[in-house]
Structure formats: structure tokens, C-alpha cells
Image 1 (spheres, rainbow, N blue to C red):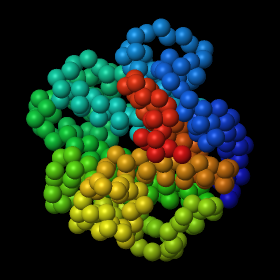
Image 2 (image 1 turned 30 degrees about the vertical axis):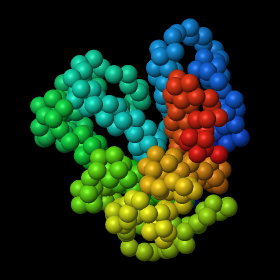
Image 3 (image 1 turned 180 degrees about the vertical axis):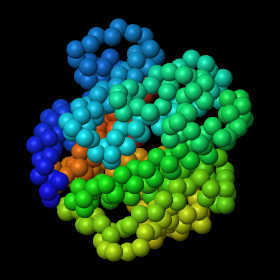
Length: 363
């Protein structure tokens, strides 16, 4: 409690700033505004009223997507920089953009492209040297991703490499460090963040398992090699509210957050009934009369994303001065960025805002 009191002023300032930004963001009740959007230019004017971009549709889409990322990063930095010594947990969240940019660079290299792609600017928190692209050694030397330099760089650059396996390894390293950053926090500071991180890792593992089995036709043994077998304690406090909870368990040994994904590998992809007692069964696509049921990875991913969004939204104001509150704020800004990007892409394909919402299962 002493630590909380020492920096209560800047914690209160960070919370006030977060609330101000969230109040103007397209989350919560303001999400409904997006359902009436009919064109990219209309979406652009809504989000960036101070700018006017007269561009062809395809160019406007790419430009808008770039500005959406920059907007999210800028607003996340505004809260993180409210702390004189930002918590490692929040810095790790911010660096998810760096890991995402590295994946983009790897795909560019595999595709033979030598021009640096559009990247995020996380300011003083960046660690990777993307300006050295396409020189992987110069980009990654001395960083957390320098393990890649021990791999066959020629194979990566020629596209003759298992990029999904490398992306999976990057995800595991990112989430492992995110989990470890919780250890620097008090129980009150980490409570909600710990719960959300555990759920997110479990769900991401399940999404990976579904995608690999359906899109890449990998068997159970092959799929298991891609999963993030990260372990965490599950003795978490129950989160108040009407979100259905799993029974809280205290002082239990660490469990694998890949358990649900490994369990899914033994279940058939074409029989909904066999999934009845699986933990995340509620996020599977429903059966439709007259149609043969098959697991839909995209439906599951959208439902899981909606669940994590609702969890972060619900926890945002529970303990205002806790670091978990700032963590939830970052999650909400990233959710908003993903939602706005999806709407922009849908509009670019001729869909309306309402149609995109129905596709994403957003409520």
C-alpha cells in the first residue's frame, strides 16, 4: 500500500487522462455510432475531423489504416508517459506493436521486398532497429529477438522457411515476458491484468490450433508444436459483475495456458456435440439448420476478442489507481484500433458498418 500512496498523484493523473480519452473513443456506448457509417471518407471524417484526405479508395484505406495505428499508439503513450517510472507491464503491452512490426518485416523479407514497411513509433520504448531493414543482423543484434539470428537467415529471406513457427515462437516470448512483468506488481495492482492475460493466452492458443488444423491441415501432433505452453497461477479473485465466471481457485499450482488448446486437438472439427464440455465451447460458431457444421476459426476469434473486450471494459473502473486499470485502458485502445481497422477494410470492400459489426459479432 505504501507504494500506491507514494505515486498516488501520478496514478490519479494517468486514470483521469485514460478516462478522458476513453470517453471520446469508439468503445462502450459510442460503438453504436459506427454502425451507420457507409463509406471510407465518412469514417475518416468521423475519426479525424481535423483532416481532409481526398484520395482514391485504395490509397485512402492504406492511409487511414496507418493513421489508426499511429492514433492508438499516441493515445497509449499519453497514459504510459503519465508515470515517472512506467510499470514494466504497460511497457510490455506497448511493445506488442514492436513484435507486430517485426513479423511484418519478416513477411516482407520472405516476399522479396526491400522497402521498409509502414511501422509504429513507440518512442523511447523501442528496442529494435527497424531503420536497418532489410539487414536482419543490424535490426535485431542485442535485442530480445536476436535469437532469430541463430536461424537460417538465407532461408527466411528467400521465403523457404516456416514463418508460422517463428511467429509462434515470437508470441510465446512476448507473452512470457508479459507474464513475468506481473511479478513486479502488488496483488492489487496485478489482479485484473493477471486474469485477462491468462484468458488471452489460452484463447490465442485455441485460435492457433483451429487455424492450423483447418487452414493448414496440420494434425494434432504438428499443431501442438506451435502452442504457447506458458504456465500461470490460476488463483485469481472473482471479478464482480454479470460476466459469467469460472469458479475462482486459490493457491493452486501453476497450470498450462495451452491446456484448452491441447484438449481441442482430440475433438472433431465437424461435430458440435463433441465440444459440449470444452471450456471455451460458448465461443464456437452455432449450428444452422440444414447445414453441415464445421469449426469456424474466424468466428471463434471474433467471439474471443469480444469477450476479452467486455472483460477489460468491465474492469476499467473497478480499482481506479491500480496498474491493472491502465492495463485495461491499453487493451481497450487496441480493441478500438482493431475494430476501426476492420470497419475500414469492410467499407473498402463495399460493406456497410452494420454488416461489418454482424460479421465480427460485436455487441
